Amino acid sequence: MTAIVALLGGERGTVFAGLALVLGVLLWITGARLDRAQERADLWQQAAQGYVAANATNVHTIDKLKAANAEWAEKYRADLALSEAAVAAVASERDALEAALQQARRDREAVYETDPSAAAWSRTRIPAAVADSLRD
Image 1 (cartoon, helix red, strand yellow):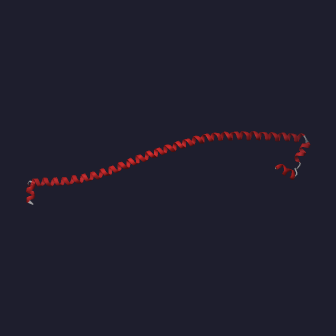
Image 2 (cartoon, rainbow, N blue to C red):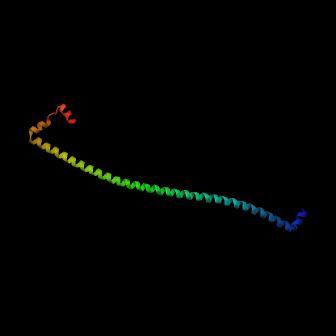
Image 3 (cartoon, rainbow, N blue to C red):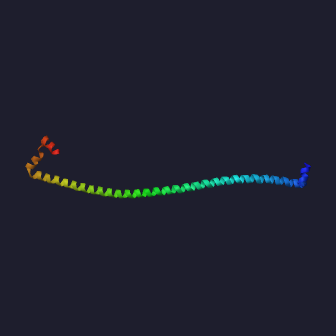
């Protein structure tokens, strides 16, 4: 052992050599840990870039869906407006027909009150054969 101590420059040199060895091992361990940390950081960076790309794709898809939905909604609004106009026209015609029917009934009742023969005729039953021929 003394030959090694002498080779290292005595006791003082041996202490420095031991310290240098310990520091070298610590630096090697720290370097290895830093390399692994850098690898993990690179993996996280790649994952983040993948998420950013996926998010951009999702945003693009969402924008396309919003545009399609807006187009459909506009068409629906136009169809709804046409439908509402058609319903209003049919309701107006229904109301006019109902008013005409009521007026015809009032006119008929007035005739029956003033003309007894018309009232008698209105109460006469129509034979089934005649009614059946009128249905066709």
